[in-house]
Amino acid sequence: MSAVGAPSSVKFTHALRAEWIKLRSLRSTWLTLVCLFVVGIGISLLATSAAGAQYSDATAAERAAWDPTGSSLTSYIVAQLIVGVIGILVVTSEYATGEMQTSVMTSPRRYRLLAAKVVTVTAVAAIAGQSLMFAAFGGGQAVLAAHGAPRATLGDPGVLSAVVGGGVYLTAVALLAVTLGVITRATAGALAILVGIIFVIPGFAGLFPSWVQFLLDYWPTQGAATVMTTMPDADFPYPWLNLGGMCLGVGTLLVAAFVLFRRRDV
Amino acid sequence: MIRSMTTIDVRGLTKRYGPDTVVDDVSFTVEPGQVTGFLGPNGAGKSTILKMITGLAAPTRGSVTIGRRRYRDLPVPLTEVGALLDAGAVHGSRTAYQHLLALAASNGLARHRVDDVLTRAGMESVAGKRIGGFSLGMRQRLGIAAALLGEPKVLVFDEPVNGLDPEGIRWVRRLMRSLAGEGRAVLFSSHLMSEMAQTADHLVVIGRGRLIADTTVDEFVRSGGEETVLVRTSDPHFFAPRLVEAGGAVRDRYATSMVVSGMTPDEIGALAAHHDIVLSELTPQHASLEDVFMEMTRENIDYHGTVA
Image 1 (cartoon, rainbow over the protein chains, first blue to last red):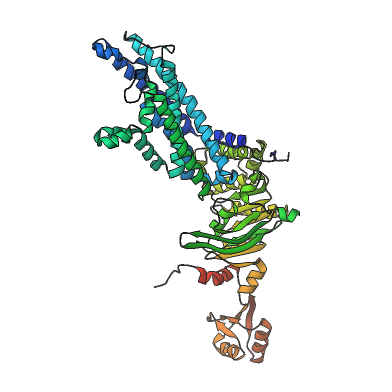
Image 2 (image 1 turned 90 degrees about the vertical axis):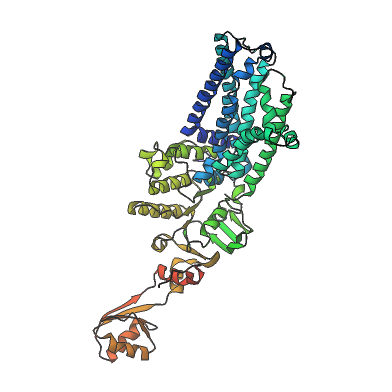
């Protein structure tokens, strides 16, 4: 141990601690997380309130397809964008300010630096995403009960899987955002591609010829989000497989991101 | 042995971006215990070389080692090399303390080092302020503080006095001298020639990506500039032709003065006595570092300003 208290060599835990300090010392991180919960829970309450109000007038068929879990978890639609912003900014804010130079100089082993960022974002997104999904579920069921509509509990078949699946989905989107940040090195570019992947392409699905639609059936974010429902979907009979496919896709991009991050000049 | 552990060794360094060769086969050594000035016109490739020294950019050819190791192989980089390349390269939303704390943590340095360097940089009072509100001078101080975190044996500064007030400039100058005095290797670039003359022991001069000179400051001034003599007399128009006859060259002729080259003050004085000319001043002029630098890099500048 020298006067500066330095270890004999830098370990992954050091890089991890530095990334956590960097993330937590930005006010924008906390503002984005507050935004995630306010918007996420808000949408869940509004969606279940609307669904609960319509339940008394619903037809028998509609009642048969009643999915209180799915309707309380619809907040993922906007939550994925907010989680994505956190993932993108962890990387691109450093490129925008030039701080990436400082980071790479202090941690010249770039795999370790990027791995520390990836682990930090994954941990934050997993905790925040999972908490949001449980909160949205709980809040949503309370609203449904207040409307006198049938509600779900975590013990019901498929419910826990749907809620946990939502958290996993959001974490995967955050990781996707990190890779896009590394690949584009620009906030606007990464955000545009993220929006394209999770909103625009699935949204266009109905406008395209059938062979393109066939490809879109395999579009990772499409089927993966089905894990958040409890009623079977004919298009996506095994949603966890779709979620696994999405994670595989993100993993592939992550490998590309690591290679680029290592090779490029800063 | 101690020497070699803290020496920056640049060997045959070349960097190409597409068809452009930005750095072309540059070799030099930065020795410990002295301040090495890194000079060159804008676009000469200085920053690119500093980036390759600190592992930010990969050389197309050649190598940079610090104590015989590549930068990325240093086990605890901040304790070996402290670098300030761009004072603006920080996130403005963090406080100075948080910024330094993250850097210290990334290399496992003790937390008290953050307070130590904040004190050394005279920044205790702004430690809790957001960097975004700092002046360029304050950012420079913060960058220098960051470079000192791990008490490194090698220091690399890109334009460290840029944006500093006179007091700050004196502080950086003294700091660099004292760091070199402690046996550390200090490499700094500056476009201020006077800064080099006052602070550097050794000079590395780059033009258009090539090494132009690698020498001491004194030698550099001596090699490049011709010695001239300022001669003041009541009638230069009479004396000038005599000087030319004697083998001198005369320029900058004014009403009562002129600059003579090619003759020593002794020879000029003797010639004046021979012609019964009264001289009111006879002063040897040393070429300034600036003159020599302009002279040596003239053909190495891509674009000259033209006077219409």
